[in-house]
Image (cartoon, rainbow, N blue to C red; front, top):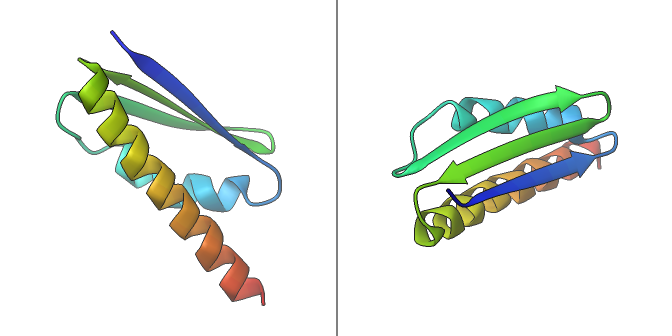
Length: 77
């Protein structure tokens, strides 16, 4: 089963975790995702049935992470 692990470290990790964890609980076709907060790091583990599903899930989660980081920066500006 193809898998990937994404790690976001630093002061924004809790904010990203708060934004991503509800999405990790939802079903994306042919994938499973689990988000956890480990100290100053948000860890997202993704497993998929095939590479196409993994690529699609990675694209979605990376986009959501970028949006969370951008919103956090805008709120702090």
